[in-house]
Image (cartoon, rainbow, N blue to C red; front, top):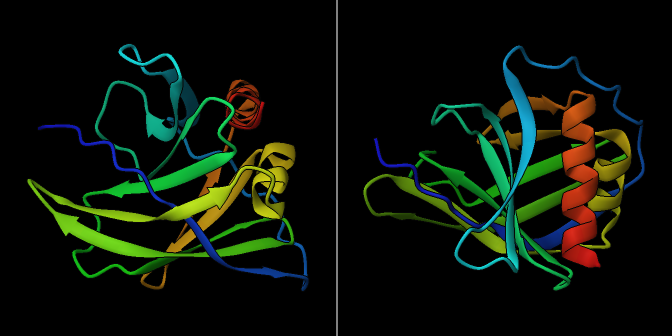
Length: 157
């Protein structure tokens, strides 16, 4: 199976307030991992995945110091047009388009590196993504929390 990395970015609407969400439990086998692109060391990816598999419900990519983060979903619904991301009380609705090559991938507009959602994600070490009514909790281990912090520093530094 060909692993496709998709970038999604673009914060369309930020909604703050309401009740803070409780941190979810870590999903067995999943964690946030950061990799710097071997071909272009100025690019990085932060992926929520099971190591050694194609099981990756969400990833974020950025260019070093660009302060622009893009979220990507590979293999999702071919008609996906928006996702909602939540960490604590920070919420962000990200719109975009889904294109189909070998498999569908969703790509949205950029998310500002200093947005309240990205800051909350770096602080909390987890987020919840809802796509087409299906929510997935993505909590980090201690190692994953370090990867999130390194990624955000890489993107915004």
